[in-house]
Length: 232
Image (cartoon, rainbow, N blue to C red; front, side):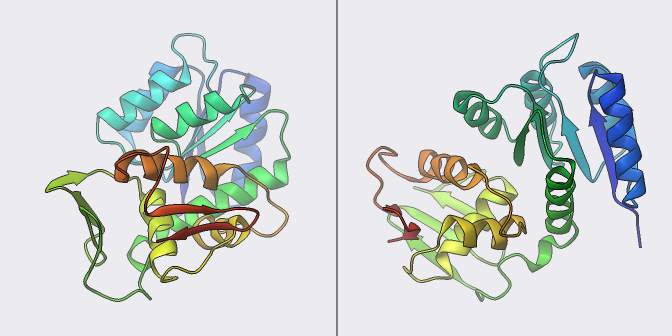
């Protein structure tokens, strides 16, 4: 069994060393890059299972690193680890292709739990949505192919990040029933009940932006007040 490899892009030497040591203690392979350019080089040279990315780097900000990774076709899961905790920064990170977002100061146990959850999803992509069955679902001008994980809107392919598709499938399989944020965090991200995150909300916002005619007045991805989300 291949050992998951984590690339940490972090310029704080003490923090980076601590993260590498703890990741190795958990049984992962780990290496550190102290600049954005070094991180990009290492990401190209060796396929990492997960990238932990700081946003405030000395040579280029983490948003640019993330955008360049995605523009070059690198779809490795990225967990942003930063002191920038504003909601706008989180939304920007997810729009650039981040899979999770943790703000400093952080709980080491929570961070390791999120790393483990992301790696579990990465190691078993073929199982995602396996219990939904084959075929397609149609939402207005959007066609979702459940077996190939492809989404087309008005004949144009729509690029969904793996977590966005998994979230969409979690709602599809409920056939209109409400899913709470906690249920979606557990099902899509593998978190336990002790982990709280706005990840679901920001991913729903991205799905609406890509799939809805008017994201501000969604027809399909509906919010159920004080309960969660459901697919119309």
